[in-house]
Length: 559
Image 1: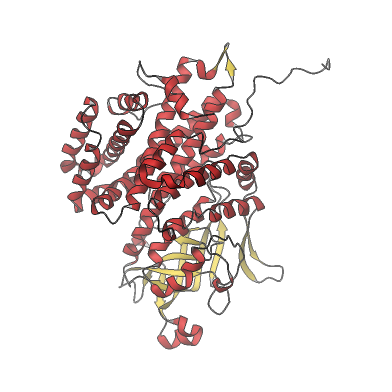
Image 2: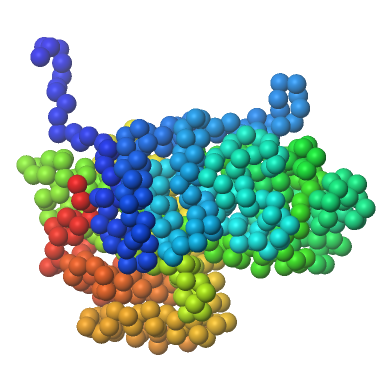
């Protein structure tokens, strides 16, 4: 040893990489099978191996280190509003698109397509999250586009393509297409009815003169959007008031980047947002200076047109959070199994076992809930499953996404100072958690939506009761908890003040029921004891005595 060296580096942990992300995730594998997508297990094994490679995980780091750059003008001074991405972003997008994460449920035609996609989304969520945003919006746009056969005939073949084509070209020249969204404005935020962007219909003669047969149902749009997600997308679904003076109400429009004549649409990107997280993804603020948009759905029915789209984006908020939780858990547990302190491995120390087992319970419950919710979307033709999705989507988006930041902070603390710095993935994962609570309806919006679901559809209570009853009556704490919940629903429907607590109780009851039915007793008993019998909102690591932490942790990460 050099006499001037101060120390040798030891007791450090190699990165969690070169591991099959699907093979090591027993709860996800079990959920895939029981929710009806077991036929996709082989393809998910292959995907898990690909995504767990060090080279693939490195793409996530690079895409966030080199954030997108906006170029408003080219070197001649012409307005272009182009976004430049690091090559790592394009590699991630190509992976997501080639595996159908943006479209597979719409063209698969096989049972369990939504569940299989949810499993892929959870795996991709352990690699990089910004690239999931344009994929989610494209996936969710399909039901809305199908409301307009003319637009669907032109756009869906490119949207359903498995080729990622980042070139800025008219849709006819593209091999694949992505869609974004433009809903919120400065003065309204979640209150989209406060939007002031105006759309004026072209006359039939004007439309045909400009765009020929494609000029029908064309409007001229003037206004702004405070959040215009993924401005590099080939088109966006945009909400605008319709003339005269908004009398028809909010209407939905498809606003492409390029017009049928090949020219650029009048969408002026003012800036890219400097966001806390999701830094690899471009989120922008735009102005429409007479942009052309095509009517999607009926005049004045913009909100109903996008409601189904919103349910799918909210599903992805739940599924995506489950994926980030899984990533944070695996990094923390991998570290704790190899790092020694005070004479023992961290994972062998009782208090650390309490923390890790608590995180493992939360992650498994989130995965079970997300996959069950995805099956509701697969079975949407069944009225009971559709009603269950109507309840569980806003409730799950509230509670599971709300648990994310606390989960991420605790996982980071397991690793300690080296988890807090940007050299590792925990800091990035921690920054990613809040966006799923904020985007597509904040916590309060979700809880009020849950109240509306119960208030407008009395059968929703029966759908929830039927789901909870599947767990039987063998667990007394579960029976008491669920009976109390169902008994309180009548009064809770009018209790706006307590809506958050109601959403939390709904999700915990469903999670407990799923774990009681499908997980080992060490998992379900600990979940019931810590979430139903106690208050789950405090710090992680407060499991009651008697919990078999070693069994829970052995199941949580199979290495």
